[in-house]
Length: 237
Image (cartoon, rainbow, N blue to C red; front, side, top):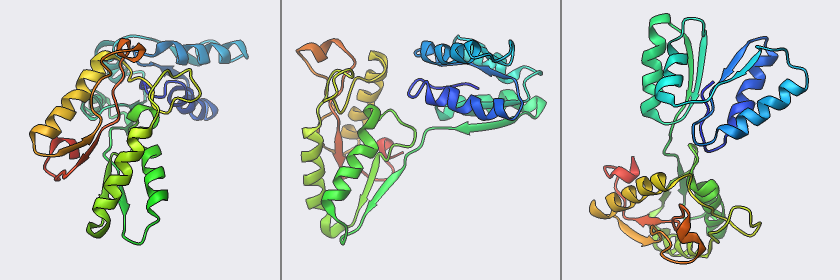
């Protein structure tokens, strides 16, 4: 089981437990950016009496450790949660032994808002569905398709609500949007912001990193809203 960094506890142990209950031995490889949570949770199972060798934790880069696990003849099934490019690589590695493979990859889910909808409710739910976990979620509804007659009203309300989101320390209970996983990931997201602008979408709000104050030291990015996005644009795909 090759787990991602965005929900390291739930997507490690949560995937491993059903396999263990069904009588399988499990090798768990957490992401290199968040290995401690999964390995700590595994240690609790060992302390609780799980026999040696039933649940095994191994940390390391996906390109070496993950690839070796996906190709190993002793492995009968591979479970991977992560990006589509690496998912395709795992399929190729698992193909010679015709292993079972289950993949949960990146998505581009959409909310659909019709003219007779409760706009305030739609705005609230749409905010939670895309900016939760700082947007780092494979099932985040990062597109909103709005009926033309209410388009302007919805964009205005959604942008205003986005700008009211409290960005800050994840240990502060009042924080609604915390840091991205790393500065390199922030640079990648900023690349998408620039791609949206260069391809003709209108940046309604957000998209910049805090320039001063305590947030400037982290990997923070202000939540961004685009309007006028076409299906051909990179940020829509």
